[in-house]
Image (cartoon, rainbow over all chains, first blue to last red; front, side, top):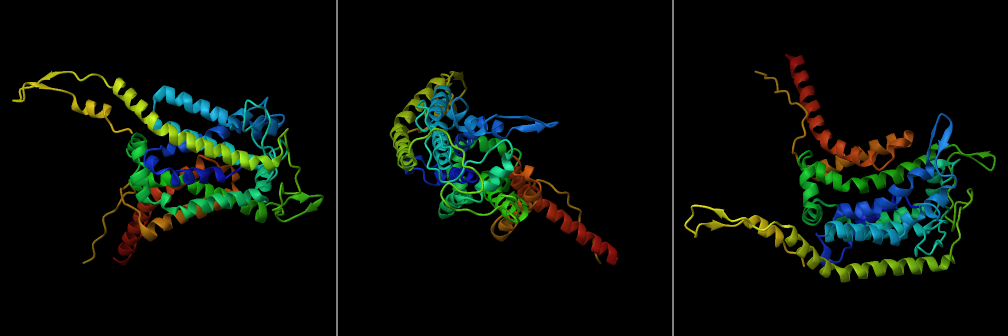
Length: 328
Length: 80
């Protein structure tokens, strides 16, 4: 699994949208898409303990990424299905496209650990590059998982995504937020502005990036400066780094039945490119469909008698405008 | 003649944070969250992290203003 990478990729997507989508794809949808796979599957991976009784998955990695299990939550199959559901329900192009891009980014990033994801579900075989060890276990829980991740190439993955965002630093500016983010989610930001000043709204927008940076630093600091693990019977100050492939060596890399790891990157990159091309191709037809549905939902203007010298009739012009909002 | 500054209550004012002041509050939020998170790892989650930043950025500036005026008021009061 990836940690802060999932927070950074939300902004990376936002920063690299095709020109025609800038200012029109919902930031919150990208976030929700990226958040949903772990929201659906991860709570039971670590589980929780009450009065000495552990409640959670018997085999965490099977539950998280396998089938039977919740592995289908980390697949393009479910991402596309949920996107289609949102589209049929609301006909909101900016939301549907954002959700799909966020979901795809999450599912494809998770090929890097030793368990991987079922990229081509319903084909129940995992795709993994085995870049670092999947380390979520009942005994180790979240802490050992974090220590292993931030001692391995997982840390490099987080840093890579951080650098991608920092190279696109304008995505974090007030200007970008005002001109590109707010227009795509005007209703949400208008609602939040009832309770927060503008600096708070901007902080809300930046907060996921902030959380990613802070958790990366905090977990890495804890794992290497504060923790006192016993590894191979030796008490140590901090977990040792191991930036080798499928590291760290001091924990077994869990795995499920998978394809040749050499295939994982080409197929994942190819699929993401396919998603991007499909989204680009669907953008205009979805826009026309959204416009039709918006016009159909808008009630017909009710004639109102007025004592104006314009012939005595006026129509609900604001409603008409709502129905004719430009969607191309 | 010295006059006491009017007391200001901390409110969610609409002050825009820009430049150094903005950086300052974000760094305050990050350092405090990371420090708290290292020693209380349950704080490191999706909900607390974002809320922490928003709370610091929204409440910090008016709180600082209030503290500053309160201190100045007390200092002036002590001189009198």
